[in-house]
Length: 265
Image (cartoon, rainbow, N blue to C red):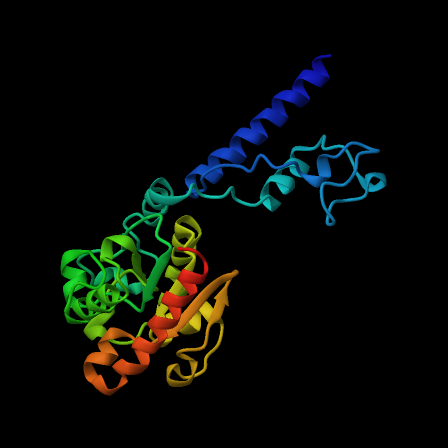
């Protein structure tokens, strides 16, 4: 009996240590989904990837439990506002890349946390860095007009960027900077659950479509990100430099309007 109690104490300590490590890493919890390795002999596998019952071994060693927990996926984030609050909290005072050294504010996102339409840009400029809100400068004023032309308001949509800190001199984001911010963009999309995404410019379009076609050829061609329709189009800053392209961008937005209408939104 004493041996059994000792094993239980050791197992409990192992679980506690693991959960504390996950908490320090910023993970939000442990999935309650049944682990395939926990199925009893004779049970039906939980899914096609579950271990056959004949191969199931009891988890008596804390190291086995550690492996089972480590292979488990994170639970889904809550939808809408509370989920965005959790993602922003996880981002924290981000120091994950070199852009942290020169920023004034992290520019996370703005708008309706339950929006049907999401706009994803490249990164903050000087005005956005100063105010902590995306698309508030000259390009942002044009984006607001584009949204209004779609019979919407900024408050109806959700707006964010691929990267959350301003690159020096508004240079292009570098691969390590995009990689550092990409998980947070993905979580923003997962939380908002938009029906359609408009990718503004090549960086957003390339990241969300997985294609590296020049934006002049990629724009106007409906793609998908994890089942969500993505419309690549020109960035408003580009349209300020080349106003002759505004007609093409408006064509892309009309396609988005038609798609939302078809969806009953």
